[in-house]
Image (cartoon, rainbow, N blue to C red; front, side, top):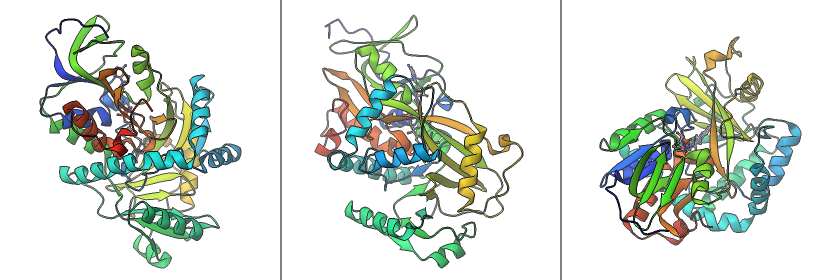
Length: 413
Ligand SMILES: Cc1cc2nc3c(=O)[nH]c(=O)nc-3n(C[C@H](O)[C@H](O)[C@H](O)COP(=O)(O)OP(=O)(O)OC[C@H]3O[C@@H](n4cnc5c(N)ncnc54)[C@H](O)[C@@H]3O)c2cc1C
């Protein structure tokens, strides 16, 4: 890193990427000047139309024992929950190799405490923000022949990591959620989890720091760290700041590459649809465990999301076949209207999750570059971890204490 006289800075901190992670960081930095640069508008990212599940229960990293078997089973069954797109970049192969090597007990033991801390801070801060949330806990619903065994295992696992969960009596469940079909064999209530509208969270966080400046439609294409500032280039325009935080979602590797760092993050495409005007509302946000589908009540509409397809970050193509598959699978567990003639009435959407190879986000300064930080790789639970991530980044920037569990999330691991 060269020592050059620091120019007049445009901001104390520049955040690259204005998705839910970037906007949460800007909201947490109310004590300094912040500039958020986004190559599109956040709407083009992944954060606004997802399922909105705030899942403290998901504190185990995605790369966990059993996941390789589950992935192969899903690929063989072509059931759509996990898939490899023909558009997958070459780097996807090394990502897969790393992922497989991380699906072990040690990875789970090292990363779970940090994930749990981020999720608990986030859930608490979402409540403090006062945005509307579902008033009930999340239901995880099992339909397979081994449903009860899997449900009991889940309750035990939650208790082991210190979270509350319990089995719900099936007949009571069918009575209180008339949309459920009798195929719902076993139901677990995850008491600390809840649902929100992710778009409401994004706008609330943006408004929480009215002094932050947002510039859209600018792609950062060069990044030069000096001893006490960082130069950021967007075409011929130059910005400078004391610190930079890279929060570019599935595009993060293309930004860290600008400073010579190769982060194992790949785009994992998912779909959501929003069924308008349901005649019977549901109260509980739900995870259909065997269908690998998330279901979230949004007023009188119902949002459903599924699929984890490794691909390129630019791949936003929508497959009618996949949407139909997701709908028909969910229909085994939920009384849904007939599939509509036009899928457009379901507002089909895709987003690319930034999936890290070991299943946990990268948060903290890059090795040898104390003024370039990363906050990315949140995979399936970026909304649920956004405010905990922002809290951690703010503590790094203020030079405050970082716990052992949080240090385990360093991008240099
Ligand atoms: C179908 C689906 C359902 C989901 N459901 C849930 C859920 O229920 N709960 C949950 O917690 N999470 C969920 N997620 C995951 C969640 O959406 C993501 O983890 C989260 O949105 C990632 O946020 P981000 O800010 O890192 O990325 P993004 O929202 O993708 O933001 C990154 C931003 O960086 C910008 N950018 C990229 N490159 C550059 C550059 N060079 N210069 C400037 N800007 C740049 C992009 O334009 C983009 O706006 C779901 C995801 C999908 C796809």
